[in-house]
Image 1 (cartoon, rainbow, N blue to C red):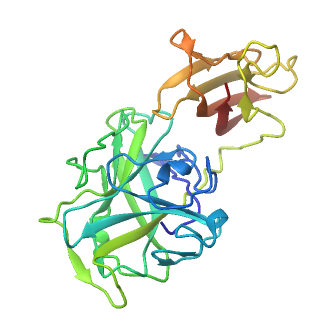
Image 2: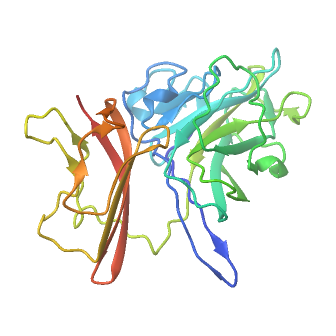
Image 3: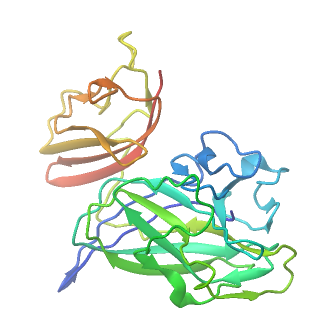
Length: 320
């Protein structure tokens, strides 16, 4: 649970030149509610606990509690964004693992993606391990009765970095994979069981586990421009039929004519609940002919005007 902010960047490599494509995960900064105890990953906007493992969310808004920043139950770790998550990769008394998961718009099949992630071993950890990785799927992993390692093979495995023992600094892990499906979900954690994991004792640890703070950094694609002033979208709407804020869509001048326009909205499971290529159209909060659930959704938009394409991504809250 030590980290600040979360953005995953995926770069598409194609000979003889490099074309970049990007996916951004929800920031650790934004929260649904300020955490006040352990096992509240779901308090972080866009993130969830995919198993029975009790991963945690830390934020400076919770200063003075067990899940504050920089001081918390597991130790101390600073963060530029004053927020991060954390999870256990090893327990000496039982085989236990903790994970965090999120959703995003579909990846492009056949593209090569490179993902970097920052981690730091918590001060209270008596052990350090290898085995961290990222598993991508086309569905949200939901194994609420599972306490041990998820029985899958992660597409990105950071085991080559060896046992990560640094309790002071953030260690950047980088790995690549070729997407063989249009993945919409990922899970982060240790996917090795106790028979396969490598671990070692470290100085200063007081508890019989290995616990890592998790954070993300990404290389911004310079070809992607985010201009939410010129191309505004609301951050909330209330589709209750009262004629006010009933539709989510482009909030700029309705008379603007674009060369090209597209808007997609995704739910927390990565399902696309709305799409249009008309800037004058918007989402009315319905999905499969029934009202969509209240909550936070992810939107992506691409707008081409005067030959220049602008890509935007953000969150919108549906309020009922």
